[in-house]
Length: 229
Length: 222
Image (cartoon, rainbow over all chains, first blue to last red; front, side, top):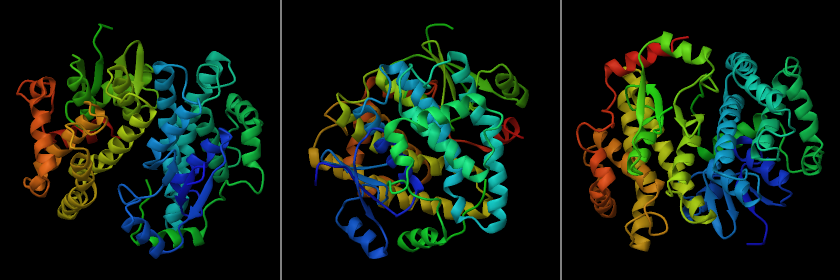
């Protein structure tokens, strides 16, 4: 293993994207190994690389970490993006839980039928604008600070920006009722590490397409229909 | 707020049960408020108690905490059940997240349509015996210690214990191929706080029944 973390996943967003965001935000360079074939995946399985037979898997600090949330928590703590004490960590965990639920509705999107995609799109926008965005809008308004927690850049900020951009890809004016979030988006996007990640040529992955879906289905032998919410 | 944490949820396991387990394992007494009607739930939302309009809600240390994982992490951190350093925490998080995926299948089971129940039960059995239990069997065999991480009782042990009992309720002989887990289960059952939680009259909730399912559907009806 080189010094850098090494990410094992498909060449696409999925569950790995939040990890890419967080490493990038922390200014950590990382390598990636893309799963393209069933054989590659079986080789990882047989080699005992995947604790629960699943990806994401991240080789970091001598560990083969799996479970997205575990990986993100480790990175956040290691790079001081997890607040200064237990209570700030609790807030960050709560906020990240919300944006995780929201992004979860988008995660399955590429695997839906065409009609279900339309339904799910409306569902995502409705949840974003009525359940999630108002919460973060209020938090920012109430304390008037630049960052969500403890007046300090944290995992919660990275995750919220990622969620905002993902929902905007479905409805470009979704932030129109949320002035605080608009300002937040501009502010966080201009942080040097994040700005770099948002530029072409970075390791940020594009919106998943049919080829991505095909690869995932083939590697995981996941041929069943995914249902909309 | 009294000194004790206050849990708001339905009178049943659901997503609150791991929190009851962890508080009990830590020897922390807590109070409970049970949601029985849609009106109660709507009022909680209207009064701004539920950050994302959802339960579980745990009032603890001046916070109104939501998001199951956030609550569990806070309790584990506060009561020293989260390992001694970042790497132990990483292991605990990995184990807990894996078990949580298995528990999710059990959580959803009562709500699956009748014609899917047999298939779902098979899935639970398959995942438990082929994906999750072998991992923990191996962890325990390799280090030969009583606890999963760092030779010390942690959140991971509590979560695994809860999962073993929950799967056994559905698949009684599930531990037959797992001698280490059988020993683990016995050891955990004998820890004073857990032993107390496993006795009748504790805050532990029974397996979900038809009445519980009915209440869930009624309270959360859109």
